[in-house]
Length: 396
Ligand SMILES: [Zn+2]
Image (cartoon, rainbow, N blue to C red; front, side, top):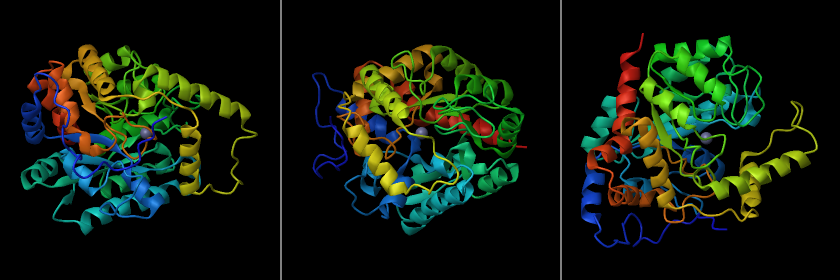
């Protein structure tokens, strides 16, 4: 089992260091540098919270820190205000607020290198000024505590997308990782989607159940996103999108941003993880009740890592990422695909992409696999920008 937590050696970081025969390395780097690159989902704020560190401080667990973020070539990264499911009904909004503050604080601490950003024009400006734009996306619809006023408040605080669920079904939307309760999206859930459309907050369907996805497609009047979801045809995890969902997303004008987690990319890895999850669910004595003590975020994550490391999960590679990008493009069209790394939120990245610093290798691999430059630029960020502009234009 490879569990990549360490930053690469300084000399190695960010380089495309293995030119293949007929390599397009120079081409790849120049394309990568001129593209607007948007990462749909990155869990670094939760790591900063758990580890009590800043973005520019060394942390052996970091998949993204200031240095690797800059070396990645990313123009704008959606930093997740991730609300663990155990906060549902127990201070979820307050916890989201805490991570929002962390994101804004990091941007304010490093104003020469980062820019807190809330619109597409801000991303363009960050590109011109050579800064990395930090954006906020809430992960877990339980953060709004069943309140449209709280949703509006989050928009006012700079949140520009929300995943309708995390792995837990909440009071208005079913999750792919939990038992269905609402047969998809209930009436309040539809109000949430409409209110997000009106506000100009992108509806993010990563993590929701298949039925909830189709309910969202039926309800939304603007394009939506999957900020960090891969393809089920290649890796049959229920978190991933079926070909039919990809086609429906294309029809909606939206974008599916491919997740880099080994267990969402590689069929064998998915089977190992799903089997182990099933086993540990069966052995759980009883579900957590409301009166139970709140788990500590740090030890909760550490025990997850410990558990994952016992699985001997097969590795994924950049080729797997390329397979998913190319598959999604062949099913939905190259206009509907993007990247959503899930950096700092997953225990295993591809072995040849241990941190964000190696992101240029994806551009190189796509060129090697004969994806044309225009399509690569769209996949890296152009498609997200189109969706974001459409959502901004749809505000009421
Ligand atoms: Zn997630």
